[in-house]
Amino acid sequence: MISSRIRVADTEFVIELKIAKRVTNENKVRAIIGGTHLGRAALDQQLKTIDYLRGLDLECLAPNHCTGLGVLSKLATEFPSAFKWAMAGSTLDFK
Image 1 (spheres, rainbow, N blue to C red):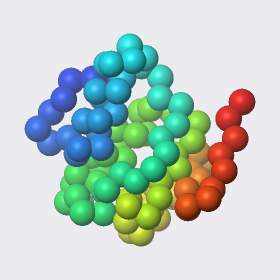
Image 2: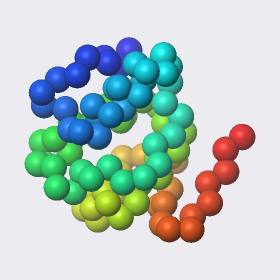
Image 3: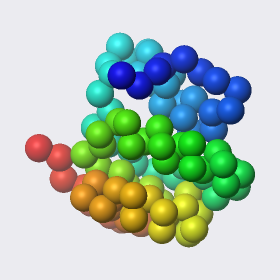
Image 4: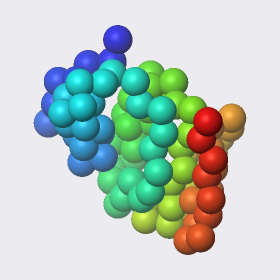
């Protein structure tokens, strides 16, 4: 089980995910859509965030330009079946 405890080393993105899980009382995160702002995070924080995301078993990971091109590339490699490029005007279908 993924810890919902917030740590100082967590990126703002991971903290927001943990808060959302707590507020909704849902442990399962199906999709993450939008900018993660990880491009400005230190490399170790980027890698820790990717490791955290691995534990979520995401159905859809659809970041946009705010994530940063380098991190977008890492996410596409790490999550090939879940990754969708979420450009302006993109449409994502959920069943």
